[in-house]
Image 1 (cartoon, rainbow, N blue to C red):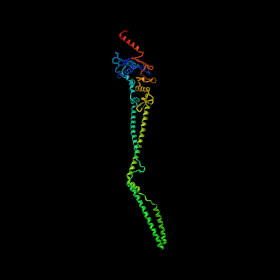
Image 2: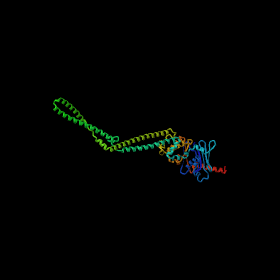
Image 3: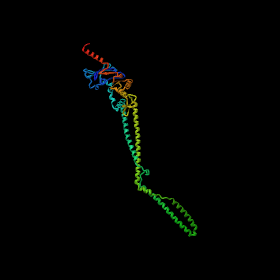
Length: 431
């Protein structure tokens, strides 16, 4: 629903104003400061929004006549407030009377008080939009899960960095064995070496013995000529045995136990190095594990963000380029504080319409911050969207639909004065 026409008398700074706003697009109420521009918007809000919008000083200063408001909607509904108590009267096209409850069905609160939305925090704006499109609860759940994952990832990342730093600071001994050294194992190895060395010594002693026997055999050969042949055979055999024994003994090498003895003596130092190496390897493994967890959590967070994106992509948003990112409104890729004044008004007005599709109008105060191009752009957008906006602007330029001067619409003062004269004469019985 939209406003067809309105009549206001004796409200705040208004003496008498009549206005027929454009059905689609922007109707700008211009004028200098303190002439009654904002009083027009306050009067509309009071007439349609109820007592909570009643100005604290509703009656125009110096007027003995109480306020009178009349608004005719585009469906023929008539809204009036007049009399001493400014009682509400709502009459539908069929003549039936109604009240504030009927007005509340098609009047969106933010349409009467758009600054309430525009001055809200970024998160409040975003939450309003999300609630309108019906994804607020689901998105809040996803964002909570995403936040929990983010906090967990933050913790894991810190621990991974600490582990990596600790591992880097640990000493490493490349010459140390992989496992801790056991004293009993070193002693066992030493005993085995000593046993092998003892066997080598016995073989050496056997070689010396055979050599002595060869000497005796030579003597036996000289002394016993008659047994020469037998002695020769025995001699040859002994020589062969000697060769074999000498060869075997020559190739034998004793193993040193010095290293084992040193290891036994330095076992605590060796094991200290082994433990240091094991600690470093453990820290490196821990750092790798936490890094793996960090990567997994990153993947889950990205999945949550994709889910949020899909949720908003399929939502029925008020504007094509409007969305929510990281808890804030985004329009054409820009956050609220980076949007142009025109875009901020577009977003706000579109959200008002989405809040209550029955409400086809919005009130806007103080548009003087907009330059002419921005004002024109916003007006064209309103027309294209079939929306009605009634706004004020400190200006007397051509962009203004009407100019308020001293509580009147410029050019209507004479008409208003004549009307008052006719009313007085009628009451006095002149006619």
